[in-house]
Length: 169
Image 1 (cartoon, one colour):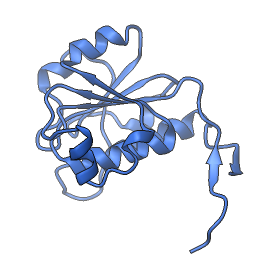
Image 2 (tube, helix red, strand yellow):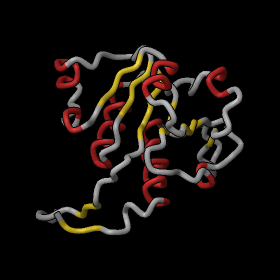
Image 3 (cartoon, rainbow, N blue to C red):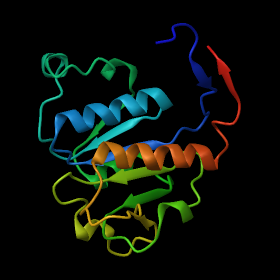
């Protein structure tokens, strides 16, 4: 495996914010945190978690990138909205009728994903205009949470030409 400088892009001044509502599976959240660390995107954890995130639990789970991520905890989605006034919010659901490729992401937007088992609560999506899905070709119910976050986040970065100017660093 080649060693040496890695391909890098310049950080955004207004990064995308990844929001996980009641995540249940520690390795998925760990993989999302790693993606957030790689993209310098703040990670918001909303509501009760299906696991602990104290230092001992994080170390035991092997989440070695946890300290490289700006993590925010919110008791509820309403609390998230209260601490992020004016932020454009995109919701992602396996039941959406519009593709994430049509979303038109802007710097500073929040990308909101739900629990692994059931997704976002239906009441959270009522009356929301920005509810997107990731099209699939097969008959799977949905994609893995960490994969979905990576797909959407990197599309948002691509749409905003963040990845265009790369360098070896």
